Image 1: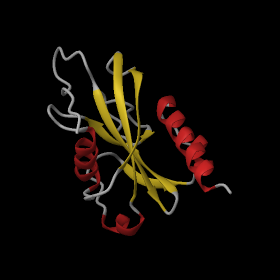
Image 2: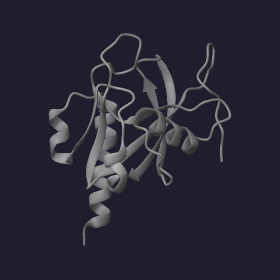
Image 3: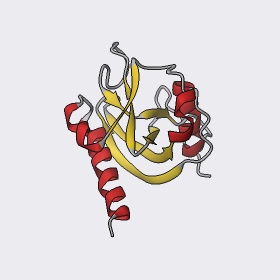
Length: 151
């Protein structure tokens, strides 16, 4: 597993692992806390966070989902890794995206971070307030997913 530097004072490289969680084919999202000092306050976003020092991206997404939802997801599928400018940190960052279906154990989740966790069908995502980057990622995911399920 490839390991990346953590976010720290003076660190030149930022890396985040984000989870596209699905429940009965719907996207599970987090309504972020509405407080200063965090990225995307008060907006709907994906669960996940920073990759810590000497941590692989898949380890990070597994840890973050456990810390934020209390769910021990064993199997994540790596979707893609991309570069994107972080408006919050004001510098380019690496984002690794992973997918997991949490349908069968969603009822055991406990929201440990954020205001709310809810699932939405793809056609309702346009009504939610979320960072444009996250919206674009979800659109990309839904397009790729619909291509796989089309005859």
